[in-house]
Length: 174
Image: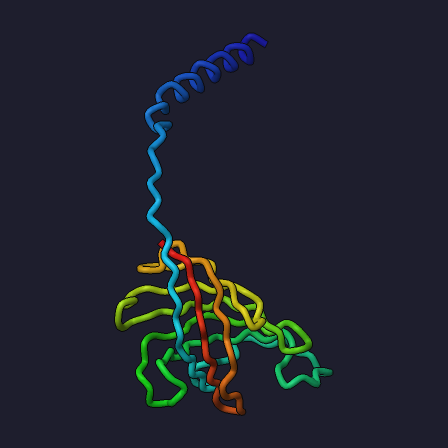
């Protein structure tokens, strides 16, 4: 009993000393936010099935009549271009994964639009959203620090080997 009481007092004294010595880290610093900027971007994603989009994993389901198999994980690394033409200027790339989990070819995507030319060289936008016409922009790096916004897409071409998507992206960043 005496040992437990003594241990309790030692712990109380020790913890009070830790609290006293850690006050240095409790200073509040002023926050001066930069004014937000709104940026509108327009570009095209060029995907080549089997080359820039590869199936990483797929469920073994025998009764799947969909053109896009249920429970498929696809890895992407597609070029971003200024136009829908295959020889238009490359301004960056899209990297990420897409999980095809719906029976109607819906998907959940984590992708990153990385830019490697022009004003936004070295910057990127992070997308984490369901594959509906509007994808949520949830963050960014470089010039797109703390970005939020929406990426609207429009399919230009979809066939057995190629997909070309037009993107209109509006982001608010600092």
